[in-house]
Image (cartoon, rainbow, N blue to C red):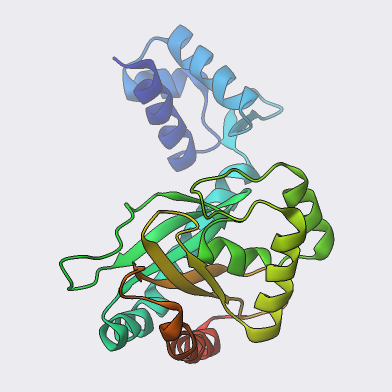
Length: 244
């Protein structure tokens, strides 16, 4: 049996029957004790389980924190989805919802445009903060010290139009903070433009960001103000619904 699958089965068994003993785990899963012991040591080294004083095993707070994060993201998505669907219908363009994950955002929802020519990013796509409109909207919600730390790493040039100059990025961040939304024209992908806003709901960095994205030939800068107004109104509605 695949060793990763075996380790996951053992982790699930510990989570459902903690504190769990080595012999009991081996018996219930019909796996040799030596294999169970190795997997538990691996999980312990990774911070997922710990040994109790009497030699039993239980999961750590890391698993609970991860579960809480996933649940919070699903809750946010469920709250935001009706409003984002209405925004997509009103603009006719693709709407993306992304959440922070380390030094990037990750795409968790996409509401597709009905146009044959449309913006498309697979779910799970990781978005650089300096290049994606959603990324810049999120970046603008961070404290200046965190922004400076992020920009200290040379931003990658994803297209010929990606802004990588630190001074120009700071200028853009100040503008985003002033008007409440971010834009990009061909900055992440050639031929794609976007308008994005951050979802906060409480002080501190944004919980998520969403964008209206479309072909640059159709979503021109002339549309930015009107689309931004719709996006900001959608943001306000969603933030009123988010738990504190």
